[in-house]
Image 1 (tube, rainbow, N blue to C red):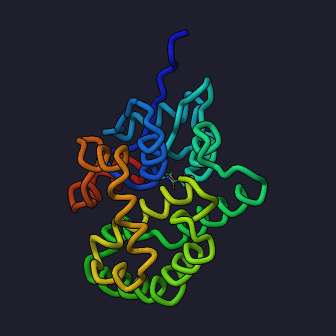
Image 2: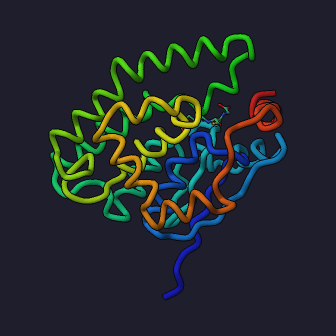
Length: 221
Ligand SMILES: N[C@@H](CCC(=O)N[C@@H](CS)C(=O)NCC(=O)O)C(=O)O
């Protein structure tokens, strides 16, 4: 049986595709990437009817055209046994995934006007310190296995890690203040599949001005 090609369509950056990429990387699966470089390409995909809400990311897998990053993450988590083992674990994985999505907005900061970026960063720092980082610390303490849910790796661990990475790039002093989260962060960095992905040429850098301008031109003009 030939294995099917998995194809991810996005732009050439992390954005809303990065959590799906990291779930696939952690699961040890190979995928192809298509990076849209021109407005005409997304217009063609819209005409082709493969983008349910005319937006990317698009993951083509098992004959499906999946959109909506959360749905993509859940599909991958279920397919690669990273979704939790029981109904209760699955619900907790979903809670953590949604919380991680609300928390992990650091990749959008370069899209704000230069003069408001510091203010946005400070607002998100406050949210991280007052809500999300203590919550992550408590989930890890209550679960007491080194993982967010159950006793093995799930998509919850992967997506929290994916969201912590850009925060740590901006605010490297925060994670060390949370002992269990700090251990978790280091453990995830040392996960062989994730560490190979993070040092590969598939991992995009922090968005820069050229990337922001490209995305705005391709998707929003
Ligand atoms: N809720 C969607 C949002 C998708 C989204 O906003 N995608 C952007 C690129 S990051 C896009 O395609 N924008 C073009 C548009 O909205 O027309 C998800 O999580 O996938």
